[in-house]
Image (cartoon, rainbow, N blue to C red):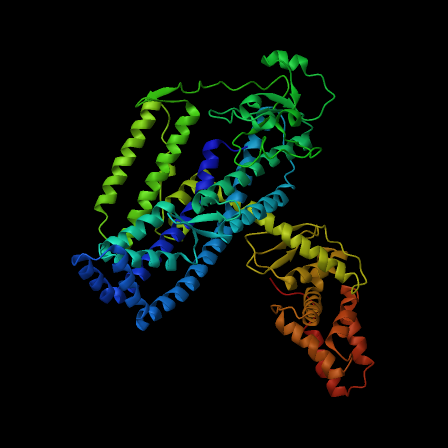
Length: 631
């Protein structure tokens, strides 16, 4: 399982992507409004003059707006910027979403690796070994897809929460421009003040994922963090479940943490069931174990928490492992494991006349952290626009000091990373958040192995489909082991069939590479390695010829291999007109045993109606296909 600290670091790694998007959108809107406002100067001057003469605000606004509506150049600029903005912002969202998918896949794979390694340590301490992690690629792939789906849902409907209500990201420029123009046409607001207001309003809302049916919103960076945290947490739990199922362990300990949910009834009240040992399957008397650890009784995990390890019952989304649930579960070894030492929850404190219990402390901290992030959003936008941010910097300093003083008064640890706002780049590798993530996953080679395992699983599905197709083409049975392994030592797109009939592939391997290696498993795999070495050239060239012809028939792109030898095979057929097409020729040649293919070609030449000179030329081509390549 993963610790709370590890989960926090992992889940925060992706936030800079969405913070970068947020800053880019806010700055883009402000820049376009600033540019558009240069066309409002006439209306602005009229409004100022009418204000000086004592006209009512309503009359001033009416006259100034009329002047703008009659200005063709102003209308043209608004229409142009509206269209450009909508195109630009949609591209930005799509680019960031794709980058988030890629990063999410790596993070989930890293989380799976960390959890597996931690379980190895736990089982080893109990004197037991875990030897099979074949389930891990499939599990990781599933949770990568789940997380990608969550991120897609987050970015599907985005926007800002304004004083006037929710506004979609596509309409944000037009809406904010309308508000800015209304202020200018009142005759009391300068362009600088209007632009500052735009940045302030958008920054304090933050870019949000919006559910218009319920009216609920969530800041994009926070939503991405929660999606990753939930996915990685649930993945770690499933890894533990799978390891328990393989080893037959039946007891599990559910962790305990401060500020657990203590409202609701049944599974929804997490405080009631945390910090206890439970069994997964009934039928064993655990009364002695309960006495040993000082627990009244050991109950059914699903009945108490709503979580079913083996899937025998439906999981309760309000209970253990539900959305944003922080509780871990650990394998409990009967007669060996011991309950962790409990740290007392901070006592309630009274600050400025208000009493805070631990839960109230955390809620207050989250609110203060949101305020600091909003101010940092505003500062970053102002700095990018070249607007003075001295006042905002002072506010950030003041609010940060208040936050630290509150944490000290409550005797709780500051969550300074929750106040971080990294928006300077869309390259995650250059952010502090990603560097912190990389530090907790130091064994990058292991993560690479996990990623290769995921890709291996995907390749295996493709290989199974190709192998089924080859049943209709090939006479010999397949000796393929059923295993596909991605290996870093192989170049991209390369393949290698081992003599145990595993297939090794490089990254970015295509249909042609997989087909080529599967054909070997129906050809040279029926012989000893030394026989293959004697007939290496004809084996490789005939396998490649059939691969290319299969790809041509399916309209699939392929990369040519063993080019000279394959061309010579094609020349033999065309010069002697052995078969009407190269596919039938390649198929018959391949279905001849590897050690008899040269003889098959010679017999075809001998029985052909070609002239002696033509036959002599073909014999020379055949001689180039004999033997093996020198190493």
